[in-house]
Length: 163
Length: 324
Image (cartoon, rainbow over all chains, first blue to last red; front, side, top):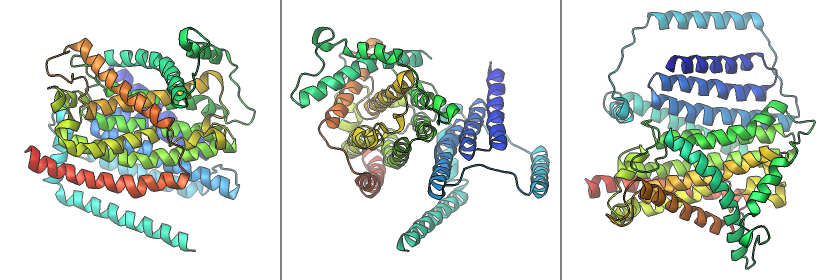
């Protein structure tokens, strides 16, 4: 049963990604991105990583994609252009994406992943505790970077408002 | 799985009666009678309306973006209804055992914004697009105070699992969160205001305000697909009311310690608490006028969000000093 759902989710993700690549309509591409992200979140659930799945849905599918779609729609209405995507610089793009793909494939296939022993009923508590003990520096650093981004965004918005 | 089937059936029956209750509440608040013709006291009015709605033609304007236009109502409803999967019914039948619990609920429910945006854009109508834009801005803004007020409860109860949260409050009225931990009263008010905004209800119904936007993102829809939007709106009301009942008012536990325990009583308690909250939502709807867009945004960002962050801090202190 699990394997069928997994295959279904992979097909769903591939469908989403395929639409992103082949559609000419940017708004449709944003919707398809959401489909792909939800499919990946489903795969996380199958792999027993619920927290990651929920964070994926909340931040990427519910946050980033919505802002993306919002931005595309606003731009289109303001400038009056047609929102279509084309393909430019095909050769350079192909070289960059092939090298990125091979680098990632090489690294992932040679990586030594450890399996963590986490009680599935209480994984959020364990992840939280490890954030505040073992990985405290990384955690605080990310919080600081987010704060800087927030202040920067507020400053930029203020500058745009003054003009 | 049982809870999912139960809530689907309950939601469909609830919507029929909630529309009637809404119209009657409105009528009594405005000192008139409301629907009186169909059936005794007009009780069959919604069923007649429903039959009429289902027979209507499914109109698709020429210039719509067809696939998103057709899919959008189902995305909105699916996003809202997925939230029900983690809700418990009583002490025997809990929701899905996902450890992220209420966090999962807030995450999937936020996806309904995508459906609304899709509907507004695909309709190719400026009123629909304005409605969708307003709705997205409103829901995204009010998710912040909503999430933080939920976090206050999570801090106090120490769990994200809604069944566990109800079980912690099962020793009569005095063990309910809002009575046992009075510091949660302000988070409850924030939660309630944000839940009105999340379900696009007056005083936050700017996305579908009839007098300005002829119905907002649902302008171009008719028949069954329009009905899906209504179903999703009432589904959102019920979902957030049940969530409020579980988080603040003891879930399926009875107000008197030993009276009315057991699975059947449990579901009756939970649903009646939720229905009381829904009555308050309707009462607010027909009492307060609609906010302006700028007032809506300043309420969320200048008042509710800072207040909820202060309450989060106070709840953490309460947890540190009073509880432990």
